Length: 116
Length: 113
Image 1 (cartoon, rainbow over the protein chains, first blue to last red):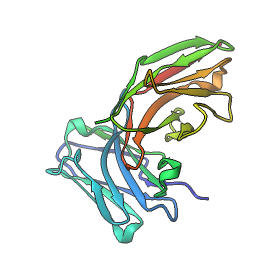
Image 2: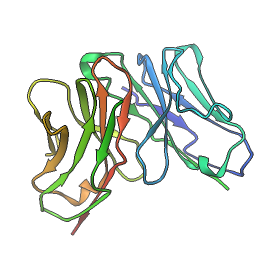
Image 3: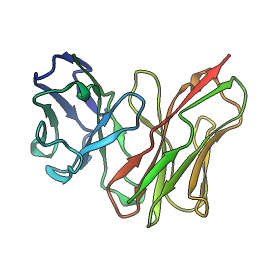
């Protein structure tokens, strides 16, 4: 089966500019996650969707970050305006809604964002 | 609230030596436990998981981890490492019946020739 797809793989922008990331999860996966991974740290959940509804966005900086999941499939994450501290790898993951499998997550390759 | 602590940020080891990467967690309810691996310039991928049953779980490439409920630990071990095992390893915990997964800060395993 095809894996989680993300684009772009790399992005360099200047502070105060806008940027958007795209994710296509594994077909049939109801749950989609966006994580921020700062260098030297573990992934931090930004937002979690169940189909096209938001389950958890408690750690999403809503003054500058936004995300949507179109028709319960693809998702976009946007940052507007970007700050220097937003430099990180943005990971998208998806999972089946199966508690018996512990919600094993499948990750995309990530988008490395550099804010200058 | 759940939390995960990976006690070592970096572990250098010589090829063919044994290794243990330590992970402790805290949770007020029963949990699922995972180890994910991230090879250079790649996304995270699941290495192994504990859901229920036998407390010792194994991966296809020789790693194993043991769930110790009394110690709230899920340490990852391999009796003999290869250069290709060089990667970052993340321990993660998810509450049973819940949807949120918390990741540790990661341990960078560096295997030297």
